[in-house]
Image (cartoon, rainbow, N blue to C red):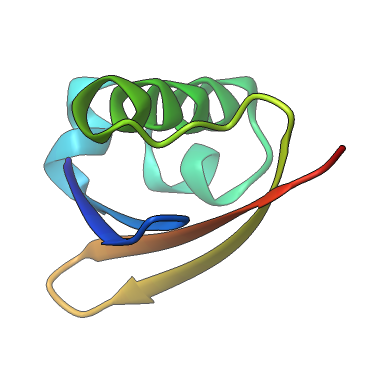
Amino acid sequence: MRIEKITENKIRIILNIKDLQEKNIDLHSFMSNSIESQDLFYDMLDKAEKEIGFETKDYKLIIEALAVPERKFYFDCDSCYSR
């Protein structure tokens, strides 16, 4: 898993199949709304907060997900203050 800061309010998280395997998540579970995929997503956001200070508390998130060649997945996350 790799996290890149694009702007102050936007990050990109890049996952590959090995990242899923390390979390014991198969591709079908990941592509569905499974508990395992939800937990992985929360783990990604926690890691983004710890590593680059990307805060999500009290923010609305806009998520763009894209599967790309080389069996990778890109998640672009934009945060908008919600109060």
